[in-house]
Image 1 (tube, one colour):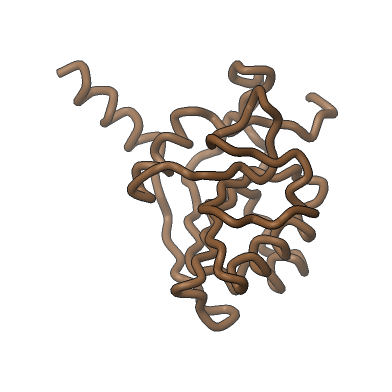
Image 2 (spheres, one colour):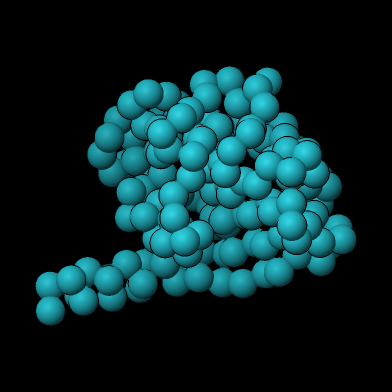
Length: 163
């Protein structure tokens, strides 16, 4: 296992998330030039404002800070979507994620990328896509919750492209 905290979002998962959002993101809040997923990116997104439709696959060593930042930015009118582990028993999940607009649990484990190619292992944890939308932030503990078989959707999309 890598000791790095920089794991890239798999491109096929990101493409499907963008399709579900009806378009791409304008800002990647936790990226390098090499792995950014949006035209603009921040290398220090915790300390900078998110003033655009933001994507964030944050360093998992700082999940309490990143989820709090996403919620605070939504309260200021800036929407964001995060890819994070489904650690539902943690305080930061209870405090920040349960106040999100939507929580989408991903079926199966994600194989994150490293240095521009798929990693050797799948994640040891389930993952979720969490949306913080200023127009429909719900009361705490009442987000819209769903499950998504994104791998099946990706396979279907590939099959349709070759048919």
